[in-house]
Image 1: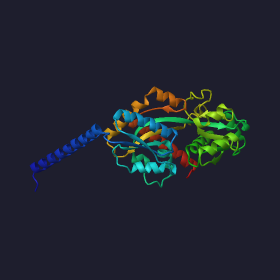
Image 2: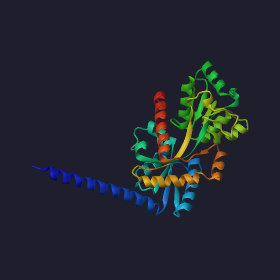
Image 3: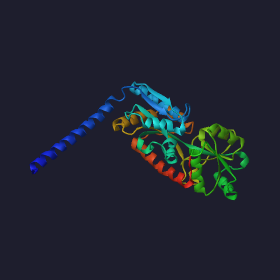
Image 4: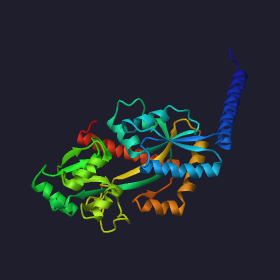
Length: 331
């Protein structure tokens, strides 16, 4: 029969082992931060070169290279609406040397639209920091006579399903933004999905479709040329690029859509490495020249802590899952 003294000795021994294991874990984590990075880092971008995520990644890579004296490479892996790159990084070693520029599309919308994905973006990644965001712009072709959101809603209610709108594809951010707006306004528009932004923009400007949901930068030239009427930006405050264009939230306070981008690492990356990455990237994002440059493209540079970024991702996951379920959208 085990004596009380033996039980006490066993308990103390286990406590010591647990304490020692904790110390070793803390030491390993600290060591990871102290030595990181000691070799090249790769930033994987799920989109083709030259778009906002790619350009932001390159700005970050330059600053990290200078700060740490290590090459920081940008690798574009487009395909399957971001799934190719996202899965690649999800399966990468969680050591901070393979990181991802994710977006509301890759980490929130894809998750809700594609339950068949072999990974869960909320569980497979550690949010590091938000890079920035841009609102969408709702425009109408001049031939429609629609110059305001109120006129669009009035016309849609008077003649249901008579107004067409363009997006860059079924389940795209533009499509989901339009569904959120229609639900709030109590109207029904006719969705015309395109395979890409080029043809969608061309048909918007030519009047083959009545209304468009697109990023501000893409439609800015046609608005300035009078080929499109700017109805609203999908943010909670007006954009300095189009100060006279109201926000959608001014008419529908619960409707705001921000297309954000941020840095993620695979789950299991030491928290010290995540914090070190976040801190250094945030230093880079405070550069005034960088902020001013992106403001001209209607993009707000943000920077955030890992916990704040996680809160944003989780909130948007809940929001867009509801929109997708209510609108019965599938890909």
